[in-house]
Image (cartoon, rainbow, N blue to C red):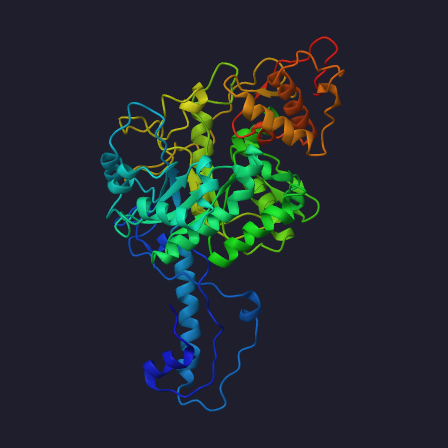
Length: 529
């Protein structure tokens, strides 16, 4: 922490002088950036020297632009000039050596994974990954990461949110899941639920912020001040995202839901967590744009910015929505993003080369510290999905998001292995040949395992959104028969997907929707395309 200038000068040489250098302040950096490792407590991250400076400060442009005023009377004129120059040199040195965080989502939907203690040791000694995010509060995992210096994000199940809106329940949860491991295990964030707004569950949405507030209070009452509370969001929270400058939260949710959540983040200095997936947003003609490969880019006429990758565009769309509400200062953390290395035959863009390209270029992009066009020089703590291939997940692509196999061998290397060269010398592997047929037309339908309860919630959400005409699935409508929840949901979900820009995340519906190249229209029931 920088001391006030007068105190600093007195310690250097008891010089009497007026303030002479701009105020330097700490930016909102993740606390584990002060560690010498990336997920780890010991060795330094890849591509950063072991002596990386652990000072993190910035200065406002307006203050830096103020003319320097030399003190009228100063017995130490050289010192007056020396200290600002020294700090500028330190700042430049910091910029060239600062570490940037790459974490992973540590999922466990598999029956062949190594024990958590082995995973923790592997990450600490063999990789430059410097944080993990888990989808529960697994005590074996929390115990395994004790004394590793690797921060852990724990998650709370969606179904637990209503009860945790009460302080006594939140205190009980903290007492059972955080206190037994604190401070040996660094629990950096508590993620309250996952993509709650996408569930369209009014009860969960209504209790989300109260639960976040109760958990934050419970942590403070327990004397824990380093753990922050957040909740991950899909990009389905946006009503518009192209161009990025027009990013806006869904109407009706913006002021009522997101403004209070963002105010909570501002007051508690916790991050707004989003899950941007170019994988869910690309089309055949935008594949290179999604993979960080050379492309013509997308020009935003409003800002005059040219976007050369979809990740930046998605992040800036979120930022624009936040800024519109007056919360552009709130930190953003990337809770999930990734690309599977193997898919089904009808997924030609899901392959090893594209996984290497996306995740490898993502790691380099985040580590560069360049930020985005609307957020230059702003770094984002980023959690790649996922650590392991998980063999009990429902589809081929879902099973193959991992960077590592269950035996800890790499599926491919994106530059997170110690003493490794990183991705292949050619950072842009050849694009696979285009598949026969057109991917321009796709339809959104329910997944085969989606329950009627979830699908009914999807219908309720779509038909109350104002963007879809649901008359065709009402009694007497052309798509009323067959009179089943799944049939009605199929029509409604597709209508919503088509009406809102055909982004893949508009068909997510909390993982209950999927895209198909086959037209589901039948008889007189015509699906939009």
